[in-house]
Length: 147
Image: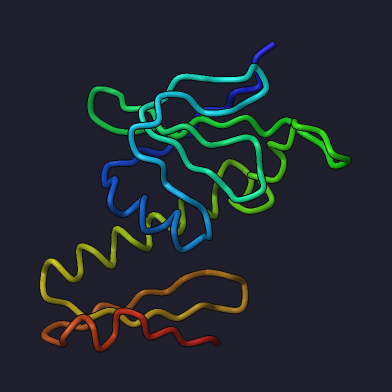
């Protein structure tokens, strides 16, 4: 029985994914050809490792994009099966990782087009990004405001 989940979202900007992974305290392992899951090793092109977790997220290249693959099987109690820890950090369906990726895509595109960016995190966890034309990106890029 396979436990591998495959993300529905497309990853088009690998640099943005690398930055999102780093922001979430994980490591992007370039050119790693397998990732750890229930059945030992699954194929991939790159992987994401979370410190202290055996299972990994695989990044698989398709014709036009990258997709994420992971195994969320696991339970506490010293088992090597700890895929549930990926979900604790990255969210169900890796939704928190996808949000962090989307944030990085916007920040990188804003910078490339000469925009600054002001970030506000709302009480419900939503990230609001305000693009500011004609302002040096560094002035606003890491400015975070909590509401």
